[in-house]
Length: 125
Length: 420
Image (cartoon, rainbow over all chains, first blue to last red; front, side, top):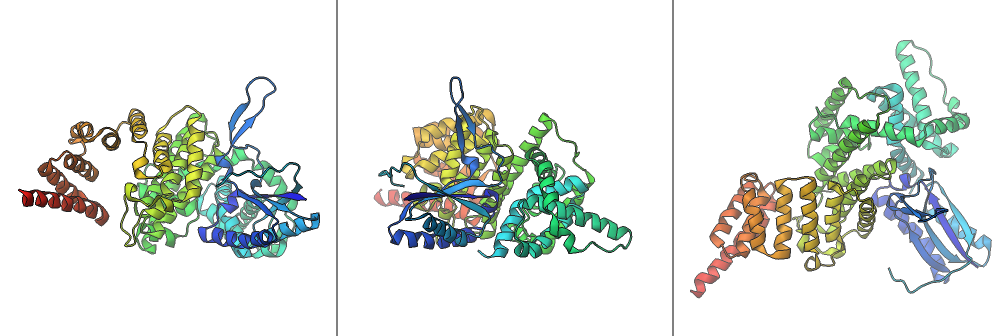
């Protein structure tokens, strides 16, 4: 089954890393990803830019949808990125998230959510 | 990353919020800083054991406030300090604090803390040093290195700046809309000063480049506090788009490489992407300002795959808009450069000549003018302009750049003499 692993963390803290810390963390995460990739189980890996770069389109009950700056929700943790992985069991997905958590000691959470529709496209970065 | 590195990042992230809340409480910058310092030390001691608190900022404010009060008591009468275990059960207090320290409150607190640093009595370099030390928490040693002065001298500069701002306190009442907008404008300018201080030497000096990173970090903080201000989006975009080029701005010897000669594959793609996204977001507001327009210009350069593909006509238009928003001979000079690329050197020179009186002592004026005269084949006049420029060069890199023009000119004239 395909799972999305959604990453939530405080972008303030992540943004306070030095470049060296960030590079080191990405290198450790890459190792975890490689492990899944070699088993042919890794789908797209996405890191999002800070929420300050985001725009939200909110549907309104009447007329035109509203375009507003950023997600305004005052949450402590922001949605910072996600993985798609092919896992045989929920336990395997949880283990993948555990490995990710180990590679990245910043506080936060991983939401493990089964996919309903998945359409990989030919989009190249 | 180890535990301690995570804690360091968490403390750095919490600093502006926690410190500005402590400042509101103690109304004294030194005491607030000491309290934050004390809370940080306890965090380093207790977080690895007990796990990080749910609300690190609230925890730091709470602990800092208590330790600050202890400090006051201790100096008044010699009562013993409460033991560390008082801190063991902070959860309820934390949640309570977090509720009261909502975003609205923080926003004015942090803005005030930043605004205190832009005191008009302070010279720009002191404003910058103070903001870096106090708000961003950059160690004095690092600031000193970035400013190319000794640590003791920088320490003294910061101490003096602090005394200055303490003597002339910024009111603690919540500001009204006008005062808030004024503060925001002053703070934005100061962040851009920090950025420029770093950018001017960042290509060859890592300590200076770090100032750019700090300015960007503070810019993101400011935008999180004022997420719908197009000029703050513009400022952050401008800093990101310029800093994105930093890896390509120096050659192997550390000499400055001009934009048109840069290897664009070395630009930082993430910063570029964030900057471009912010420019587009800002411009949707339809309230153009100087930062937004400058960011839009930087974005035109940022999306060009090569120097030859630059949209100079678009850039000329944007400089026209910038001239209307913020008239200055330097902006006109920049527009002239765009004009020369879009419509040729004659049209550009017509724009440049009238600026002579006001830009008499400006290096770039003579450099640009010399370049235009050279293109128009007026070699004697070009040489004169380049000689003026060299005399005004502010750095060896600037002088070297002009010297290359002069050498080229000499080569051209030799060639002509030879063929004659």
